[in-house]
Image 1 (cartoon, rainbow, N blue to C red):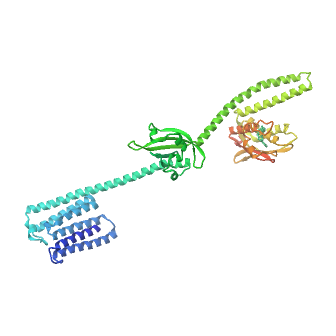
Image 2 (cartoon, helix red, strand yellow):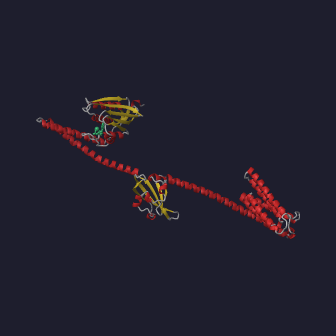
Image 3 (cartoon, rainbow, N blue to C red):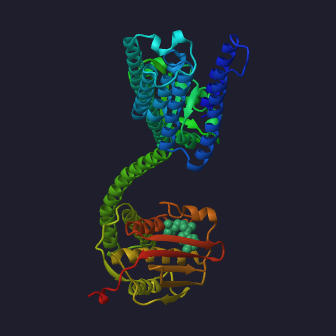
Length: 539
Ligand code: ADP
Ligand code: MG
């Protein structure tokens, strides 16, 4: 609508100016018609705007406007000389913008409208039915040959249709390529987003270096592993974050034309902690194959390295333990023969009191040695045991009875019980007794002079819980940290195996042990064991 107004104003305005040279008055009849046309276009445009505001961009409205345009052009041609008018090209302009707005169908319809109007108008003039509006006699249609008139009409019609075909073809082509471009752009954006999300969600650190060795990208995992923020490292050389990598390996683009390689080195995170880094470098290439930098993929192997060294230590310990257990086992046999022999000798008469005392020492120490070998074997090779339902109450009761008879407890320690009935667990009864015995022994050893030990059992959070509380010497925090380590002891005669055995046995049943102790006040050990339903209640 806007362009139509501009175009009309310029075209008809310039016509007025050009023609004005030949005429004296600006109100000669031909001018008046031109003014009328310009005015009509203005009025029409005003109406169009009003209608457009009401209806919005509808197809029939567009058809109506362009249809009216063809009529206006015909009118213009008529008033400017019919067959001699220079304005017949305006049909083509109308058809071109019809093709832009209405595509093929619309532009063909407009071409047909133009052809009909032009043909009818020229014919009517030719046969004298329509008076030429304004023209010199030499230019009137009757001055031409009939064949020329037909030729002119056919040419105009042909031009109209040709332009309709070509321009609608071009318009459609443009629309199609615009759509394709849009779809491609959308695909591209999606692909880009997808790539970015892959790079940033991957678990491995990923960074790229340009040919000069400066960091050009740094993904989220890389930030997490190194502790550096992306903005901090972009554009910096690799040595800023991984000096060890740069020192020990050639990371230039040319050095791994042969393909990727893998290494591991220690590295320092941004907060100064030292970690272990596994990385591989491959060269980054363009589509054409030209190297444009390097790609570094890396993982934080710190946790894995710690685990690895732990496993190694455990393996080494296991091997040493296995050997020691073998030796301990071998010690027991000669020890048994020695003890037996000494006992036989002791039975013989004629011993001085000194000999007897010495033999007593040998027997006592042999006993101790045997105990140590037994403990050690229990620790190093706990028998897998016969797992069966155990009533904790009776297991505790049996052990306590033995304990009360033992010299270490008798007349010295008062034992109190708080046992809930009917708590069952599943383990080898020998093992639970061993555990309780070791803990009771420790409690008794912690008590200097007289004291008391309280043993309680209850169900806590569906676990069987046993606590053994003494009012002995207690222990410092430093001691508490080490008590479960094998051979850790604070007692002159201790082996440091008691709690290690407890820990080891409990571990094999998925149980837990906790200690609470205050120096000088006493200690409580709390055991947690898996609880099962009483076997008597099972169907
Ligand atoms: P041992 O009894 O041969 O010393 P254990 O493994 O049984 O070895 O105990 C390790 C250490 O834990 C003991 O030397 C002792 O210092 C401490 N300990 C264990 N139980 C108690 C307790 N009830 N009260 C105070 N200290 C304890
Ligand atoms: Mg002990």
